[in-house]
Image: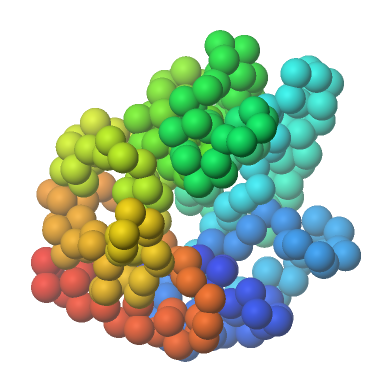
Length: 288
């Protein structure tokens, strides 16, 4: 069975229109695009934004539309503010489901950083799940209302393992999904983020630990030089994506995989190179 390969929209956020994004993704050979739930610095209504994507899909023949951040900001002690965030997300996904056959959506619950003066921003073990209180875990679990919506409409949410969120490590993302306890809510394994943490289980152990809560995967790469990590092309860093994809296939993973651009420069070129590499791996392991 083939696995859908999704292009993260950050390959085409250098002034491209939505129609151009859809057309380029299809022409390069992607199956779909992960769009953001909102575009930065663009004055538009939710309806207008979704209609523009729908037009791009219709004209280009794009097969899959997924959505990612921002998720509802639930890291707020004001219950009314959290409820408003959840309702806004519910409204968005109801409208999106009227236009697209949604499968899985990447999501977040609001940034969680240490406000203590002098704490380094890049010391990720001083932020996110490492400092989260019981209240903050409880607030994040209010995402359950969106899980109920996804159950109703027939799609899934996956918390991205991403630095400076309560779901920063794969284990923390799994903990949150388990707290929410809805079949539609799981984890987006971005192992390219996980390697930024000093105590990082292997890919094999991570996939095993996530089990049937692994709904989505992001792929990117980096290399460590003098104790600091620097983003690279997908085939050029320290993560062995041949092993990664083989282990996913063997685990029975049935969600889409998404590749993304973690570095500046000519991202349109990077998209084509990274996709060619990914497709070569899928062919080699018999997953195409």
